[in-house]
Length: 217
Image (cartoon, rainbow, N blue to C red; front, top):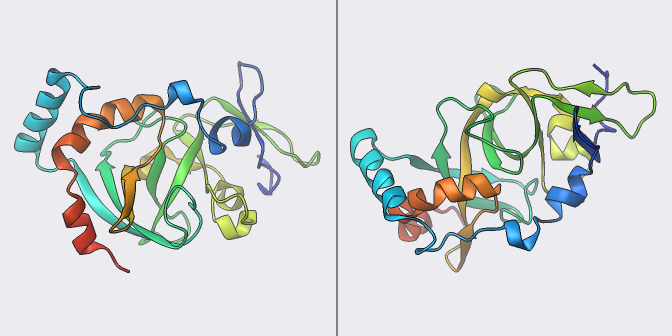
């Protein structure tokens, strides 16, 4: 394990596959044909019905979270945003996916929560731009998170380049909708799999008026 993670900004790959560039394949946007939209008509009645029943018997599947800071700009407001977060009681590679914007416990401040994008999970090989750092593979239940704002230095971004890998169990939710202002809001771009799973939840639980009332200008 390298002592410094600062150089780990561009190369992240599966240990068993061809090495790929995280920044070009994810942070610069998904290929258009892979980006689904949260629109009625693209989900089945069964998916919508399942979401309704879960809502009735399990209570709300989402909660509101206030995020402050520019680390996730432009995905989330340049300075702040009110977020609709889908609860993830037990995060694992079958429930959250590379490309998801997640809420996680701050590794350095236990009472604080961060919003970052999931960049790599167990089995991914981490390669540094600094030749002095040895590559390593993320262990079981480990993951790597990054800020979206590429203009920030690693320490300013306060992500895995600063504090290293985190446990998947530190992830408590996935951000599915962001309200920046009363007139500027919309779904958050996550992985294809997650956007598909979250569409029926949005159909049932999204309340923009409620988000606006709780928004801190």
